[in-house]
Image (cartoon, rainbow, N blue to C red; front, side):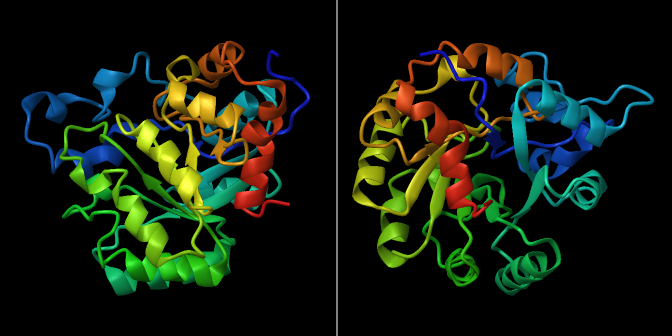
Length: 287
């Protein structure tokens, strides 16, 4: 069945266009070594066409995103706390946006304090992290992450972590999906959501999600026509409550492209509501 239009969509990864988007990735360029990465406006630009992360003169970033959300039935968007636009959106549109916090656990004490402060000040619904983008890199099962994981358990919020090969030209071993096996063993109360594909380990991701109740997957940074077959098949069968929608606007994809291609994804009828809404509402405690 084609995607039902009445579903109140939750986008687990959305943001706001910016005239200074390129500068947001300076920390990643400092870690890359190839000449092409230094010239890219977006360090994973080679993977995307027509990146929409720019703001026309006179336009308001928050309104641009809200208009795009309205056009595609997105009721709630999860946004990072990293910009003034995000803080203004949370203040002016509290029913439409919920906050997440990105952390680099190299500063262990600072990360834990920042999480607790963000929960108190902004009621964050998740902590996010990019192991390959940390400086230095931090493997998913590294001791530096463990206080972050325990803090998420204490605050009853999930942790969202990049899994699989990194888009920017950085080493990716720290994001090997197999590393989540040890984390799930050590933290059985932790809710973990793998983001950005888990490729080329998507079949392993499915195996681990079958094994560990707290392990989940979101489709962020993937255009729907590229959703891994193993993930679609898992959502259609035993993993209906494990797979949730995450977009990538404006970082790499337009919502128009995402939702146009979404109609061709081979989800069974019973999958659409949990995929587009129900799983996110439950995992991020949105209701």
